[in-house]
Length: 127
Image 1 (tube, one colour):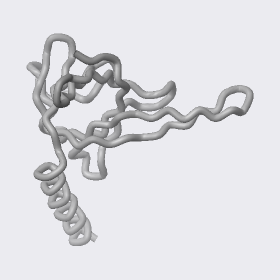
Image 2 (tube, one colour):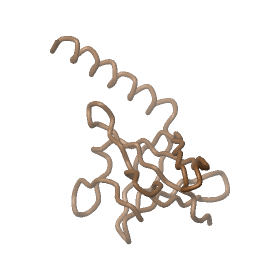
Image 3 (cartoon, helix red, strand yellow):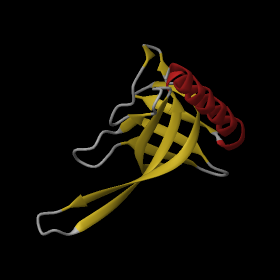
Image 4 (cartoon, one colour):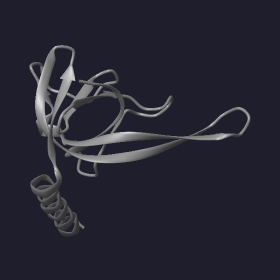
């Protein structure tokens, strides 16, 4: 069992390296005035909520997959928190995303080995 787990961990580490090298981009993670630069992969999550009348609403989140050891502010290593922001630079603008998730949902998840956060956000501004 341990040998299989080690193989799975090595495979996950290899995949993370390939993704970082070929598909990541630099973002700025902010909590108030405190900030750090991180490499992130971009993803999405769909959340489904059913109202009192039985009507389903699907909300899509822009997700940032960030290594846990890169998410460090002046106070040390942190976990994502609702209200924090991520700034993503595009060609001519920077888009600001607020960490958020639908009511009753966590605003982040961790991968199997707890090496990365999948942070759920919504776009709130650009400059």
